[in-house]
Image: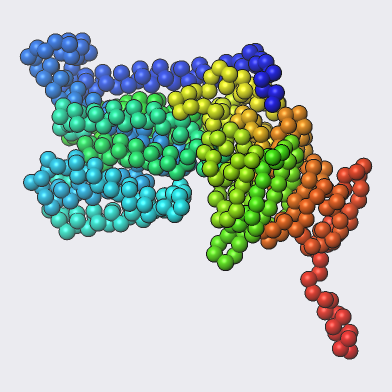
Length: 343
Length: 273
C-alpha cells in the first residue's frame, strides 16, 4: 500500500465551505434559545420588563415580579426546554436509525404507550395521580420494547420496526379511545395532558426531568458515531465494522428513555421530535456531530417559544402548547419542505 | 497461504431450496476475479457471505489463512470492504465526511478521524480523483461521482480486498468504464485484490484476470476469460446463442438469440404428416 509514501496536499484540504454556515447556525440557535427564555420570562398575563426580570432573577426579593419570574415562569420555561431537548434528540436519532424522515418518538410506541398508561391513571385511578409520570414513563418504555421484540427476526430491520410500531400504536390508541369513551365524563381532565401542556409545571417537575435529560444527553454523545454509521445503511455500516443491531438497539433505548421522560412530565407534545431535526438537517446536513446538538437547542427553543405564545396570545385561556406547536409548526414545516424540494 | 480469500463448501438457502450449494473459491493476492451468472444464480449471495453480511449455513471462509468466523467485525473491516450496487441516496454530508467514515474500523471508540487518518482520507480522495469535489454534498453529485465517493470511502479503509456487487448497474457507459478503469488502477497500482460480481460479460472479459461462472449456486466454469468464453459457455450458463470474437487477445461476445428450449414444433408436425 502506498499510503505511507503519500504526502498530504495541505492546499487540497481547503477549509470546508460549510464551516461558516455551520458556525452561524450554531451561534444563532443558542442566541435564539436565550431570546426565547428572556421573552418567555417577560410575557404573560402580567408583562414584566426585561430589567425587572433581570433583577428578580438575581436577587431573592419579595416583590411580585420575583414571585412571577422565579416561581412561576422560570420553572415552567426550563421544564419546557428540557422536554424539547429530549424530544428533539429522540427524533433526530430515530429518523437516522429508521432512515426515514417521518420517524418521531411516536413511531416506536412511546406516545401511545405512555398515553395509555397516563389515561388509565387519570381515568381509572385518579387518586394515584402522583404516579402519573412513572406510569407514563413505564408505559412508553414497555410499548417500545414490545415493538422492538415484535419486529425481531434475526435482526430488527427499520421497515419491520415501523410496521410493528404502526400495529402497536393503533392497538394502544384504540384502547385509549375506548377508555375515554366509556368514561366520557372524566375526559375533560385528560385532554390537556393528551395535547401536551406546560400549565402549572413547577420546580419539582424540572427537578424530576433534569437528571433524565442530563443522563440522556451524555449517553447520546457516545452514540453519535454509531448513528453516523447507521445512516449509511445496514450493509455499509456492517462493512465498516459496526455492530449494527446492537447500535440500533442502544439508540432506540436512549430515544425511548428521553422521549418517555419528556412526555411523562409535559404530556403528549408532538411535532417537536419530527419537525426540529428535519429543519436542522435542512440547515446543517446529516452529520450527527452537528445535527444532534443543534436539534437539542432547537427543540428547547421551539417548546419555550410556543408555550410563551400559548400563554400570552390567548390570555386568559391557557392554550395547550402541543396544539399551538402543531398549528404553527405544520405550515412552516411545509414551507421548508417545498423549499428543500426546489433546491 | 498466498490466498487472499479461500471459501470452501459455502451453503446458504431457504429450507430445501439452496441458493448457494457447496460453493468453493480461492482468490489469489492481487488478483481481479469476476463472478458472473444468470439472475438468481446465487452470485450476489456468495459475495454477501464473503463480506460477512449473511452468515453461511455451512462452510468456512479463510482470510489470509485465518478463519473469518473467529475474527471480530472491525478486524475484518480493516482488511476487506465492499461497494454495493446502490447506496443510501438522501444523505446530506460532504464527500470528505463520507470518506472519513471509512476510517471507522481503524479508530478506537473514543477516537476521531484526525492526524494520520486524515492523510489516508486525502490519499483515498486523490486515488479516486475526488479532491476537487471533496467539499460538495453527496446530494449535489451525479450518479457516477456518487459511486466514486463511496468507493473512496471503501479505499479509506485501506483494505487488502475489495468486493463489488454490480457497482456499474445504474451508470451510463462512460461512467461504467471510468469506474472500471479506476478499479483497475487500484488493483494494479495498490495491489488490492478485487472480487466483483458483474452483469456485463464483455466488461468481465476485458478487466478480470479470472472469471468464475455460477449457476444454481455452484461453480460451473472457471478460468481466464479467453478460456471461459466459448459458445457452449453462453449456451450452458446463460441459455443464449452467442458468437465469440477476439479483440487483441480479449474475447468479445455478441449475443444472437435465446437457446430454444424444446424441439421445434414444426418438426413434430412434419413427421406426423
